[in-house]
Figure (cartoon, rainbow over the protein chains, first blue to last red):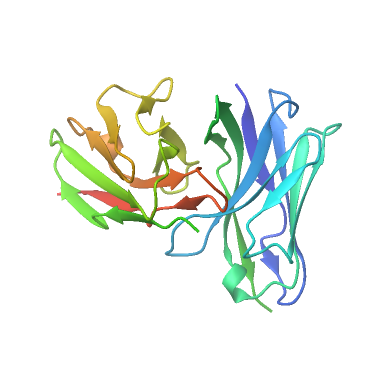
Length: 120
Length: 107
């Protein structure tokens, strides 16, 4: 059964870069789109962006200038980098798989999430 | 951006109750609407995709209906494991957006 696991620092200094990795286990990262979603404390879910296993990306334009998503098929991982972070970037970050049924997309598998706090 | 408005924000119900959650899109999104269940500390779980199709493995007490902009999720008879927060999501256009969530609590 395919599983996703987020990893990375739980604490990041303001103005620095937040980096997270999602490891896909018991399945291949190829032939799928992969995505990041976050949830600030006490708030709802925010979609950040997605990547195809070929490296093609689409970002939420609210973050586009700061966000980068990459993929490493040799490691079965994809990663998120968010630069110039502030306290507003404090959130639980989730990685997920995108499943396409005809043209209908949904996020069918998720990681359990990792809390990242931006604070000095 | 497509705005998704869920109601109610919270809901108190008992085991065995029938509950309905509503999601309204700010524009027509066809059937590009998904529903998720999220329990604290767990991975969110896909319940319904394409507005009304039950995800494999999801119990049949969950169902959903759609129109062009108004969508509903119904749980026919609540079990203890159903108390969670539910989110709708549109994937009609980027940025994909979620509703604010409906927290379903035990009465």
